[in-house]
Length: 124
Image 1 (tube, helix red, strand yellow):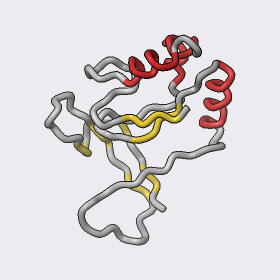
Image 2 (tube, helix red, strand yellow):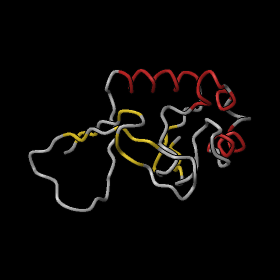
Image 3 (cartoon, helix red, strand yellow):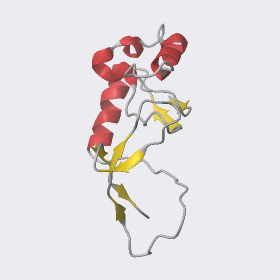
Image 4 (tube, helix red, strand yellow):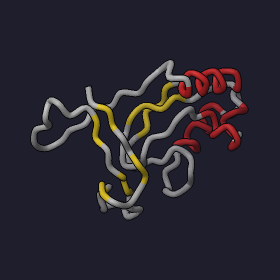
């Protein structure tokens, strides 16, 4: 199943009040036991950062979850993102590298710099 995650919602780590897993559990838990299995990330194949929005893959069975994880880890499918930025980027630039740090306060922007997790981005 493809689920649209709104900005400000978290997939399943309980760091914010709005949890996508609570919504998916209410919708599919009776038909899909994986939706309540924390060891399999509640069926979510991947995650998005809290401030962002986008589509999330949700497996509705253990077989689908393991198959999608295998495809993700072996590069059989990819994720493409669209961004909006200010200024021009040199055509020779093929990758951006920055550590991204998200502050938990609602009105504080995500920052790039010395803190945070490495977040390489390949540019087409």
